[in-house]
Length: 94
Image 1 (tube, rainbow, N blue to C red):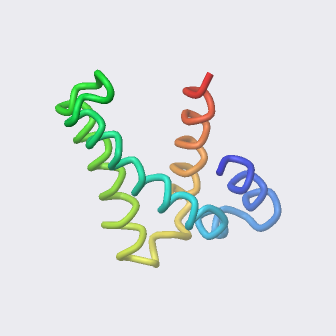
Image 2: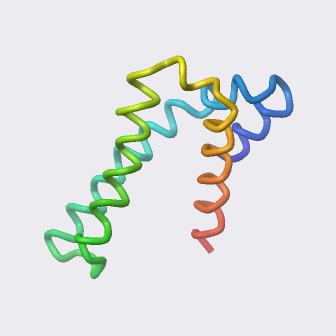
């Protein structure tokens, strides 16, 4: 997502960043629900009490705000959100 977000930012401006990453973002954030399920069944040692609010807030932003209110998608802070979250995901994978 980081590549697509930065590419869209440089080519078209902040208005097109969300459109460039929308489907992968929705898929990844929705799939993150599995982290909660894995914690509940004991596949991982992550505490559900910490994972649930983190995943829940991401789902709220992705589906509750960005999907429900399309006019928010082109705001400059949304592009900042997408890029900063993408950077932390890249950094967290090492």
